[in-house]
Image (cartoon, rainbow, N blue to C red; front, side, top):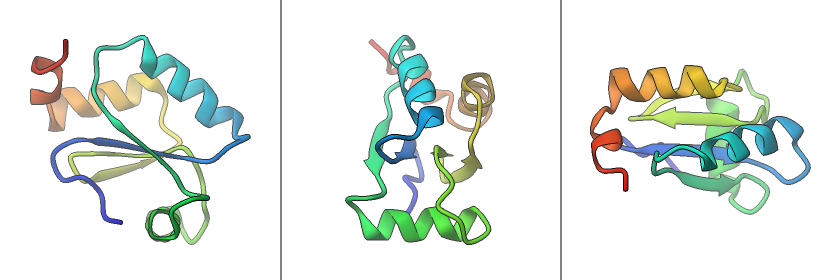
Length: 92
């Protein structure tokens, strides 16, 4: 699995408190994004390892193909404004 070059992808795994926190906060935004469980997708897990120094550190998020390891909601939204503002325009 490679990063979505135009959108936002949140790589997560069950039981991760940081993932739960970020995913919950994102649900209150109008941002459209894709969630990928790295325990169910070996290619996604390999991608996360490739951008997180060999670790399966989650949440890892890509914004227009740019990886961010364990970003805050603010960091993620700032990256969207900078690299993928079109995603905000298409929100409901």
